Image (tube, rainbow, N blue to C red):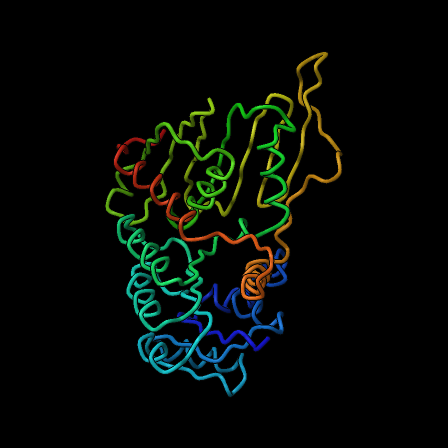
Length: 325
């Protein structure tokens, strides 16, 4: 098949900057859109844009001279006939850019999360993409990753018994980072009964608050999500307690525990086959998009799935109050 002509709007860290961060590359081989695109022959980067002249100049030094560089998203979209557009700008500009891309007939959009800070705006753009037969995916990259998919399937199949409680810890905003957990939680159990948030007064004026949340599921368990200050922590932790064990994930490293029924104590398990691995970074995202274009089986986080997470965040915000839990 012909190459998938690809454009990127927004030339910041997730597009290429994380490649220069030793802490990130020690965890992921392909931590950026650019590194993943370069790794798969079926993609051809033909255009990129950013409003910042400095960002454009830095990016030029990392790509072939044939890549067209624009100063505006509108100019890129109107000048190029693209198969795939990556929207990696600030959240407030996502809807406008996606509107232009759908109107231009671009076949597939990969949007950074969150789609929007407004559920209604996000729903409108997801519905519009569907109406115009445009593939619309959101970069919750763990949802594209085989090891996380297998782990969630094992939980849903009851291999460790029923979920009793889930505890999560995150930093840097409920929309931007906390929503990763909500996306994973909804894969485990999509039927939410209620949700509430708690935040301190210092965060009350922030668009994306780093707040504590409690989500109750109709399957009979609660998920507690704790937001922590990024000045002190940079972490991603998920602790899942089940009838017959415990799955503990700390910065995408998994520890598995089994319940010893003679004592009901949890003991570390060495059972093979249960792990999470994000060392591929964004590579699984692009492999699955490639499979989509090839007509093969794929695991893609579609806009509807990301929209479900935003709906829960909207519920949390409506039911939020001052006072950290």
